[in-house]
Image 1 (spheres, rainbow, N blue to C red):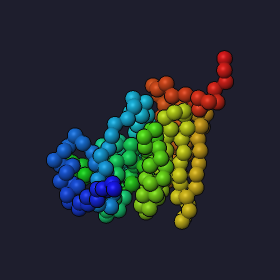
Image 2 (image 1 turned 90 degrees about the vertical axis):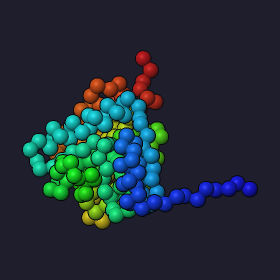
Image 3 (image 1 turned 45 degrees about the vertical axis):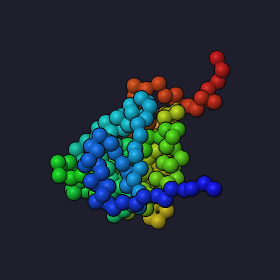
Length: 199
């Protein structure tokens, strides 16, 4: 008979203390359980950096704030995540040394990887869609140049797909930017490898 370890639950305050005690490590907090965040490939890191830069450039002088994966995002009283990028236009989320979490995210972005794609598409998507302030959830592929935007439309969510020749539209922010800008400085293919014709 195989013994199964019971999951250990901690409070939000205990999670915050864990993060303070381990400043070089990030833990997501979901319904009482913590999940250690792992690193990714160089392509993942580069795309994540590009995402934040592209968002900041597109936002221009708008009173919105783009954050990288160092900023945790409050999804509810019992859920805190570390998306690869997030944007808030709420005055409470101005960057200060006292503010530790994005309180009212409007857009969250996840850069996909082999190890996280399933979780990002299913589990995390449900958490993000349950957060009332989030209007758009963006998934950026790393195997080839493609972006998915899941957009809130009342009680429903609509899916919008963008390829390498397209401009991504984030309607909740009133901005657009080219897909290719997210892949600047990478060797990510413009199409899935299996669709590349033989020379």
